[in-house]
Length: 467
Image (tube, rainbow, N blue to C red; front, side, top):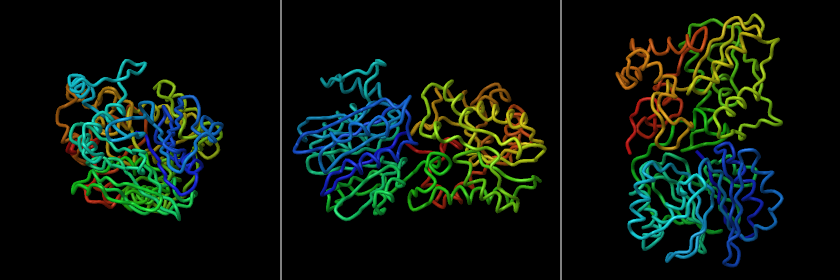
């Protein structure tokens, strides 16, 4: 996914920029970058984060980032920020984007006589493509609207200009962009958890397609928000940090409400409930209260060297890291019937390994409760998993086993309580060697988030999004 942070102040911005960007580290895994503007000169650094952390990469060079305005990025895709000198002026750009029609847009721009630098992968930099689309406009607003009109997928962005920071949220609002304020400074971030310890108060949620410009003293709307919004539900299920709020809805409160709702309709008997760190914990606490059974830490995350932000891009290494950083508590597990709450089941490989370990440590029964419905569709908007094929999704593989074709009756498999849905869940349960398995219903998830269904993107569960 990725996350960005920008700030503009009456004083030096380097410290706020450094820590504010770092607070987005759980959103991305590949690249980190920062840029500042001082006396008309941009300073920039970009580092690979696949084998390190943002702080250790950038802290030694923090003194070079002079100036009162800057932007930073944790990127799951390309090296950023990039610098542009165009008829609109000089600016630095960061994006949180997924461009599904990258090849088509590349050809269109090449046919117009534009040119691209090329990454080592042989592909072009999506952020550079966005910059070229912006430069087709007569103003920054026209250029950003051109991006909205041309890109299939999603794109939120920050532009560091000589006149201030321009923040633009994806036209359907799939990713959040939030403004913070303190005396003498504004900040903008994908994650509002970056604000409190830096002294900012959340001031404003940028709307879908809205464009605002920030100076140290002002926030000016350059484009009004669109009327429709589809913010990603997976922010509350997995991606979002527990203390963050999007559209005024707290992440941990949504997870807690989700767990409580599941517990009240669950007839299973168990000795206690435990959360799979990190994103299953809030749900498990809600489940424990709703069910009236204790919460215990049967699995603990080893945080000194395996924080959540360290997630290698290679899937084999990702699976190994997922195993290494979670340590079961043998004494709590022995001869116990345990309900485990987790955020989602994507491929199923990590969960199957974890379940076998739990039995090996003496668990008598392992009951899994999942915070979202079965994932039936790959995400075309933010790419919450590295899946290259829908058949990497365990639910779609099971459907193919049942139907001979993974696209048959998807609407029935997405509907809780149908024979197809029940058969899907039972097949997944058997494959993962779980005593019992239940997924949260779409209705419970939406009620726990608290926004109207039409305002929340649930494409990965029911394919209901619009483009």
